Length: 189
Image (cartoon, rainbow, N blue to C red):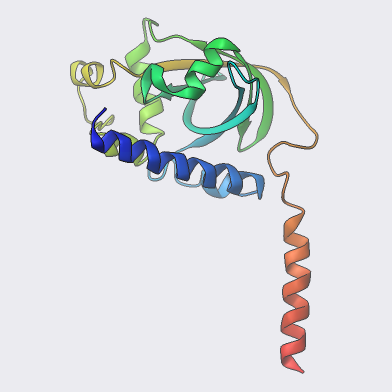
């Protein structure tokens, strides 16, 4: 593994934690306001292949004919990828809903490059950070640079509701608003 890849993996680890937290605070729509610039994000809830522990990982995605596609850019070494291979029953948080789903590696799909290009365009800044320019690259170059990438298709199986999902911390905002209002009111006196 190159030093640059190690640094990028660490960068994305912290970025991902922050994205999941912001999603729980209710910022899903804000996080997805400029897909070609900063990316189009969803959160995948998956379970550890040995521990069974619940994990949440934000990934870039695209939707084609109501199917969700994402990419494991670090290939087969990504923990979330290994986890969904072991247990394909996952949850996805999209900006407009929360779904139970089933994930499947379709890296050998005949339209792999076409779908991969759409996901990479939806990755905003991330693909160019790795030297991939999906809007201008020819198929041969794209194929060469994404050989280690894994293409995942997610079929939504049922809609989810309840606690411990997206927006689980939105209750914080009314409390913060009241506290700020009271603090500002006292300063005026």
